[in-house]
Image 1 (spheres, rainbow, N blue to C red):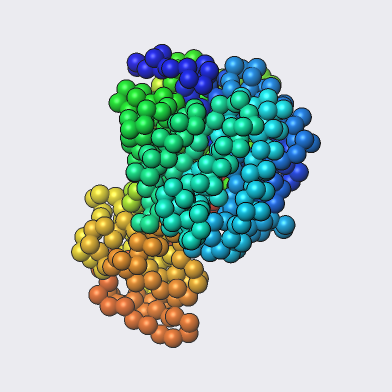
Image 2: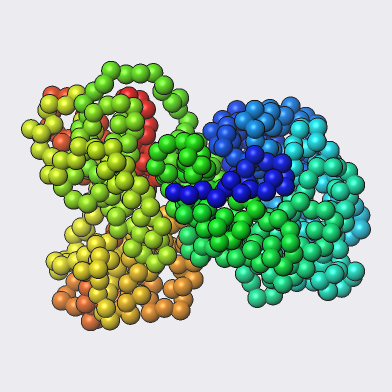
Length: 628
């Protein structure tokens, strides 16, 4: 593989052009200070980067997005911030302070938060109506930024990044969709950028540190920020001496899939915007957005002439991603799937940043470094839990046999079949490549008790099986395997019993083949357990597709092609049903639970407790850490 990074132009005095993009961690304890958890997280990712941008730093305690956010508002934060910058500098990596005022997007659940904006309108998808800013509040915001810059200098940050995009305060002035003012700060483009430039000018007067501006090349809403105005803004920023433009997309209020660069939005749109700004303005640009493969980096450097490349979630999935690209680290890259399930989901739930594919992120236990005697392990089942177990045990030097008669990946080998979820196949491909490259002993048979008695320990990762409800007349039905090419119906009437995660995803895919879908859920809510961005977009798409949703509805009997339902105590009939899909839940499958194998036996993943993919991988990691 050819690497193009050697042509790097050293405009920000970085050792290379790779930057870790800012990603919220929620690893604080509520006082705004750096914790050991922060330092550990960033230390794993820093060595091969030119620069690292920690999570967004609040510039006032009343402006937090998360109660556990890092602050840069007062001098009591300096010691912790210096510990972070010192650690980064020890690896030759520059520290970039990302400064942001959320405006109306401050967290409404945090007591004492302030909500101000260019407008007095709340975010369209919810939130607190802000106070329309006047001269006094504008001056206060400028002072907050200037104070944060002074703290950043004292904490030895090398570069500043100012958030002018993503629907936060500066963008709330710039965006014609949000800014409804009739004074000198509203209306024309020149007026709408006036206050953000006042903030920038005050900072330029305060510091000699290089300044990066992060902006949304397009907010992806009809009346919002669009690229032609951002090109015009970039020309003005260049004249003011801004070192680089960091080009993203979307607004947290209206288009979060673009903000988070979710798997449901197309890759490379932000790259195209950055390239256009670079070509039109002649300013260095930072390219960002789902850069998670070596091929992506080669493409950016060769075809897009990228000055800088910012990587966020790919470095969560694999801390050595950039090191592996640069051939300074060995091993297969553990892939980011752009699912937002572990990273965004963990933060939203208050558990802190996690990762579906990387169980070491936010692991609460102690990771064992003690060498253990080499053992012979049998792992039964080649789903995510079983493959992760094999990976961890082999990496620790043990001999491992994997018993799996079918395809590697287990049930997750169906997970990428619903619309826009193809990236989920990456983790299965990762395990397959690892098994092949490391010549893992794969026994292609259904393991019997007699096969396992010669091993030192046995790990059962046999997963789960679909629950078949006792419904009169129910004989022939599918589970998620209906999505396989050989099973996929077309132009049929299909009833799906169970509107949770699996049932909803199956429905979404079946609709692509002109099927009429009836989604029947016992509870009052569809798509429980689905990642929030996917859920919102999926249910939105249902409004324009050939699907009928039945909540608080129970299947009582099947009579040929007729379904007898009961909705809130009232009978209901569905006629001419061609196929039935049962997705009412899963139950653990553990064939050796009652047998004495004469060796220690451990259950992991769904075989122990039915849960999500992230839990299965984490369960395997935890057990491997304790055993080996």
